[in-house]
Amino acid sequence: MNYKFFMKTIFYVGVLALFAVGCGQTPQSKTATLRDALKDKFYIGTALSVSQFSGIDTLSERVAKENFSAIVPENCMKSMFLQPKEGEFFFDEADKYVAWGEANNMWITGHCLVWHSQAPDWLFVDENGNNVSPEILTERLKNHITTVVSRYKGRIKGWDVVNEAILDDGSWRNSKLYEILGEEFIPLAFQFAHEADPDVELYYNDYSMALPAKCATVVELVKKLKERGLRIDAVGMQGHIGMDYPTLEAFENSLLSLASTGVKVMITELDLTVLPSPNPNMGAAVETNFDYQKELNPYAEGLPDSVSQAWDSRMGEFFALFLKHSDKITRVTLWGVCDKDSWRNDWPVPGRTDYALLFDRQGNPKPVVQTIINKTKE
Ligand code: G3I
Image (cartoon, rainbow, N blue to C red):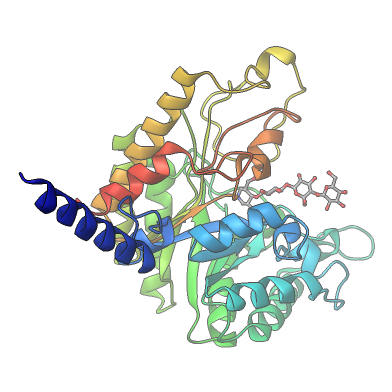
């Protein structure tokens, strides 16, 4: 190669590289984010706490804006916050959440209309503390659901209507809701939500859905709702998983069973804990807690490379499964933005250091994020 030709080649390569940078396409495609890469597959969501949409936690806010296409409120739309006293609604935070979602072009989900946990005490009892009648509870549920769903009509695109009504063995949870209304509280909730906003998507949401007995009852529930002509668009498999539970196979079997009823599946609360559990395979039964012990918090100073690689690899396998079934899955939502935000740091043992999410404590993507982006091109 003569010198002139060599210099000319260098010049043109340089011009081309500058052009690519100018167009925002660096050779490593640095601009590809999860949000962009997954846009033809499913929404990729995150749960937001109040501080993240109120200008307080600007680190996680930035990560959420840049990487996610869907949001769900971690706590502020639960009934104990929205209606702390009968007839007295508090919408300040929920309003901010919805406005933030609109300003950032997110698919906005509401969470959750009916749940035995984080419900205000007054909901189930009379002034003497006795259970109210089925008629009164029905009226209270109708009023709560109608008021909340109507307020965000056309803005919130989907609601977790009922959360966690089935136990891990497939039996019904003996909550106040069930005690007073039996199974009927579920169809009623779906009916009231649909009447308040006929266009909004409606979901049933639960944890440990890879357990066959639990999944079988949810499948029956979906069929019963459909037989009665009620709207249900999707089932949420929460996805609070660990390093050794559930198996991918069990998760996939449940996903397929749920999808076979004709509804879509959503992974609604994904996180992967690396910490030892005092009681294996616990899903997310928030009522079960254990005291802090140092030996239950082994990675307070950081995660060894081997554990971090194992975490990455397992999270990557789950995303490969989600991509394989992207025709059945409409949304995959992480339960939090960065590791520091995860409820896993405080459950089932308070005050631990977990590494459960896709972004680390400084807001950097973990290696699996690039793996997921690459997998979308396969
Ligand atoms: O509101 C009080 C506040 O007044 C007080 O100062 C503070 C002190 O700890 O506590 C606040 O309440 C906390 C609440 O979140 C709101 O921040 C509770 O202690 C805490 O236990 C509660 O945890 C939430 C949990 O639901 C409650 O059941 C988690 O943040 C939230 O991630 C978790 O989310 C649930 C889903 O909704 C349903 N599926 C399971 C999932 C994980 O448990």
